[in-house]
Image (cartoon, rainbow, N blue to C red; front, side, top):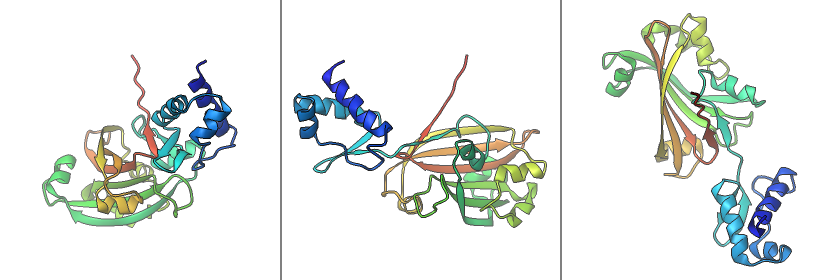
Length: 238
């Protein structure tokens, strides 16, 4: 094992055994160089690898810190509610409803839903949290549009506690097919304020079109995930 690999393993072991926790500063370059009887360039090689794999965050003039663990999102693998997905991971998700209202469909939204521009749609905007502390940063900001004619009862539902997919299923409108597109965007001020991130920081943007069994489009959604706290799993088999 090369000396830089020993340093890398040493830092990883401290994180795994709890000696170093998220946000903690790791030993400085000079300390690691002295501990392993090696040069600072060798230490920097180890720290560069730890930075590239997302283990630490190096801040110029301050040092290196344990990076926050990214939440594995399976939104790209399954048709499932956000609540059900996180509960499978042993987490207790919480939701804040930003707004739930009837609006007239803009041209882009109408196109996604196969409606005429101006048709009535239900707009549901929610902030989703991975835990029960809503004072922390949200995990995702999601806005979904549903044709009002297909399920007007949604305007009466408390989506702070109710699941949209489970509610639709209870009305005989289970989502059976979803097409999702994922790209990287930067956080404009309106989005960054809600997600509690810096303006123009990177975000995962996922647009989603959901259909029911007869092929009709039941939902179009737009979701923003902070790139520094989320990662996505895509599983492919042959």
